[in-house]
Length: 113
Image (cartoon, rainbow, N blue to C red):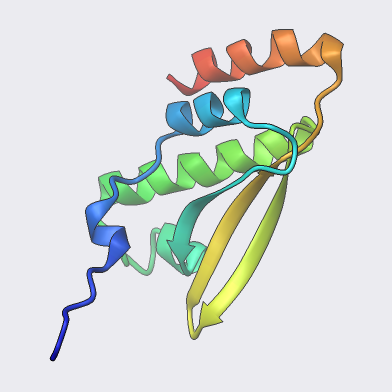
């Protein structure tokens, strides 16, 4: 019997900057979330036009936000290869220093909104 396989990327709405920051605020150290699946560098390149302009801009902002969270020491970025131009881009929550946790995450959420 043939059972159709649903492409999860078509069912789950794309992650936003705000939802990424909200997730990180509630995440325990070691928790992870896939913030994108595909070929990120190709998909955010404006010259290749792989995505419509609004989707490309939103993806570019999401990737920049993930990078910023990593620079602040709140998370680590991991990439897992599934196949040709098929990568999972993963954000892994880090243990946060108590002082910065209370002030940085609300600021990042406000900035992402």
